[in-house]
Length: 157
Image 1: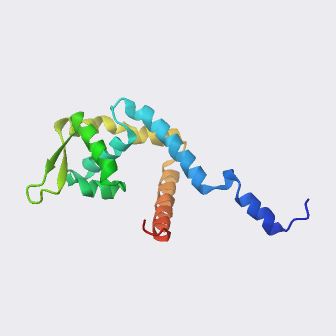
Image 2 (image 1 turned 30 degrees about the vertical axis):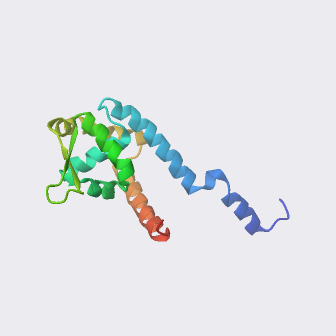
Image 3 (image 1 turned 60 degrees about the vertical axis):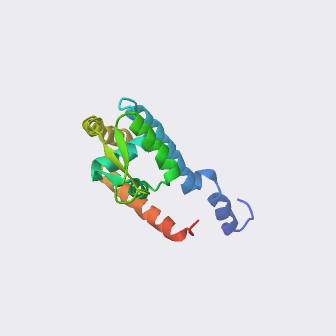
C-alpha cells in the first residue's frame, strides 16, 4: 500500500481509460457500426441511410428539416444522405409548393418495398447483443435518460 491519500487514488482510478463512460459508449457505437455494416449490406444501405429510412417508414413524407430533427443531424450531413438515397431510387425530394425554401422527402415504391426486407435488421442486431428484451428496453431507457441529461447540461454551441 502506498502512503498516498485515498482521494488521490480514486482520482487516478477515475482517469483510467477503462473507467471512462465516453470511451465505453464510443467503443459500443463502433461495435454497433461494424455489425450494422454487415447486416445492412444486403439492403444496400449504410447505417446513416438506414436511420433516414426508419424515419420515413415511420412518419411518411416529411420536410428535410424535420428528418434532421428526428435524427439530430444538420442539413449539411443529411442532404448528401438523401441525395444518395434518391440516386438509389429509394427516396424522392421535392420542393414544397407552399414554401420553396422547404424540401420534402418521400419514399418511392422501392423505398416502401425495402421496408419488408428491413424487418429482420432489428432482430439480428438484438440477437447479436446477447441481451434479452427486458435488458434491451432497460438499456434503451437509460441511454435516453443519459442523452436528455447531457443535452440539458451542455451549453448550446
